[in-house]
Length: 196
Image (cartoon, rainbow, N blue to C red; front, side, top):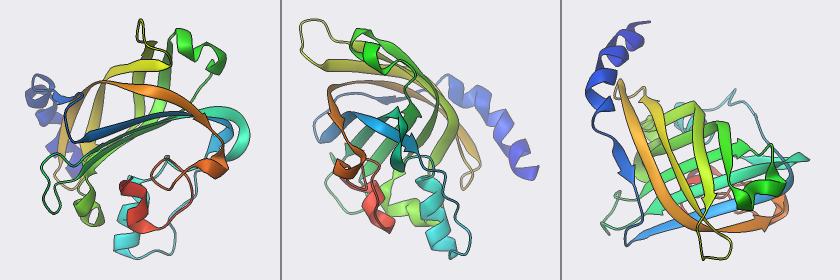
């Protein structure tokens, strides 16, 4: 409960200062529809503190074979070009209306994780279990969509909340679970989950 008393007062201060994620040089974007899939909810029992922090940052972003469709949204920034400046954002959620995604859909209850890739080990990242974003077709562009939404996330290491203002475009692709890299939602180990 103590951590919550730190977090709540910060909501008012940070809500008026959104963290904007837009299209800039040095960033890569991926929007992947994964068919015949579901989100893995594997637990992190028996891990060291470092392994547990890495697992927590990636919780809800691993994808396994299933009977539905999953949307994997990934943003990676290396625009500053120096050690530990790489920044990741991952959004993963079930698609209820996958056949109409090219006409525009709303993703509800998605997992969200964001932070500097090099500081995952000490649990310095923001996360949300209930992110919502809109995926809308970009007029005049084949298979290109615009992703937008406001996401309220918490960083338990910093005892802070932040509102992320997402707005970026990317080319929509479809893949199977077996074609996914660890960064995209496939199997992997440790740091592989946070670097393309």
